[in-house]
Length: 328
Image (tube, rainbow, N blue to C red; front, side, top):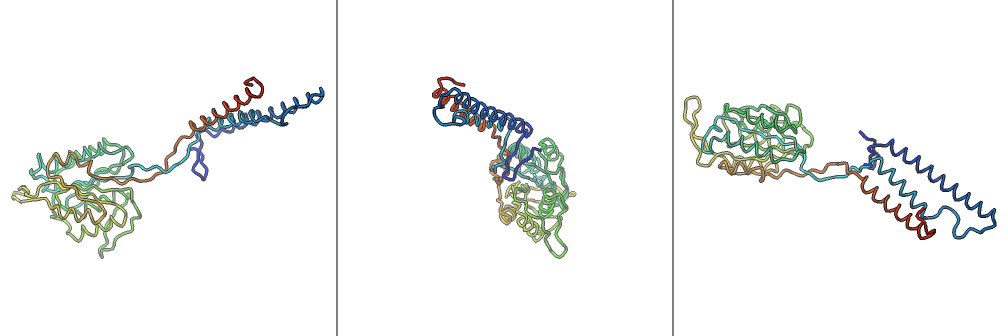
């Protein structure tokens, strides 16, 4: 890591700056001595020196140009605030039995997996993406990472299992974001997770609740996410008409619960995104607005400093030509 100042400036090669400064110091010393010797020689010959005594302005401009070249040589950079899509996204994927329904072809889960892959491809490299599969509980299948191959493999490996707990989906996602196990106290107490404003949970589900947790649990989990500054963006997978699925030998009817997913998202500052067919799911990445964060980013200054140095050198040469008829 390059040394930096409190003002956010840094040098890629500070040793080169020291060498450059020594060269400039030697040039300044030589210029001053040369002017003094020339003045002394003129005085000894009885010739009065014309104009102002001391180092000419043209020489000072040229020396300033050399100094700036030394600075540019050292690779200066400034840490400036830059707005960008950056942070962490956790894809919370519903793998409950109802996601096997075929009202979205080829099935809700398969369509959601396809949409998740498209979402991953659409994100910039500055966004780390994790995957959490949930039914009655939640299992972190891939921690947030910039490796898209790992994320896609985790999505592809999801399989149907059990009931649905949206509370577990949110708590499991918060655990992946914070790197610690997040739970709600038996008395309903919510832990302090700190602030994670650059994190977003994208929850793909049909919204049905069965086999784990209740609406109060999901509400408490959503409140916890809101307190931590984490938005939950919900994606409805399924249709209002629904379809039948076979669970343990029984035929059960399951339909999309858009109202529940909408309320859950809006309580955290997020939004609900309807996707009743595969075509809508494929385009879901363009409808989810990930928040821009402001991060410090090193911006190279060498080019600008070198351009200014060149301007000073040209100005010094021009003044020298005007004053003496020579460039040096």
